[in-house]
Image: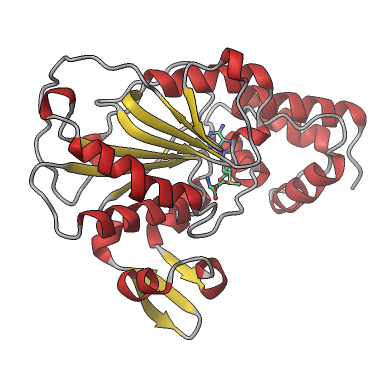
Length: 297
Ligand SMILES: C[S@@+](CC[C@H](N)C(=O)[O-])C[C@H]1O[C@@H](n2cnc3c(N)ncnc32)[C@H](O)[C@@H]1O
């Protein structure tokens, strides 16, 4: 089935408006291959008919299915490993040695655009490794969000095939994965327990959370957005980053230096440098359910 110019324009505009994904003028083949199976399953005979259905659907289900189909979800454990090394060797030691008056007892990290969970669980393993034993001082939690509910469901299962584990250092693999069949591995509960998965559209206008994040990982997501959307997203991230906290972006991505509230620290690593001396109200120490940590709009 061919996609007409008009149908492509309509669909790409809708995808941009709803999810921020800027397809440009030449992704007809990608749109066709990704949407055709869904359209055929639902009995649509043309892209025009499918677009009309999307525009008229009031339940939100059609858009949800479109998001699940159109996003690119490639991910693997310990991707762009320098970021996790930086966290373990520099950012975390710096965080825990700050005087309590400058610090909060929260250690919250956000994996924004987490896909099937590899990034969030890698963070969790790094934290587990760093702290070794749980400490009562720190309320640790990782919020992992994506727009794609299929990915979030997969992530919650925490089951991965051998090829996704290729970058994991052997000790971590031994410590935090259990074999469940010939080529499948599941993350152990102590690592899963830090992570809370939720659907979150990064192009929503404002972000509001119960507390700020020490680090935000938004890697290999902004490549799909255009400049105005990236600019707005960075400002939103900045507003929910704690002082001295970090933003990690994909190593093939870059931020406009003159137009970025964060300070550049290292390739694809930025910091919110401001320091204030306000003492924040302590959080209630966490249970294994991390839902209470993140109040979302
Ligand atoms: C290529 S994956 C990156 C996964 C992981 N961060 C990594 O670097 O391995 C990009 C993810 O961004 C998500 N995404 C795209 N647009 C989004 C939006 N508007 N809001 C939230 N997530 C979005 C996709 O669903 C996809 O899972």
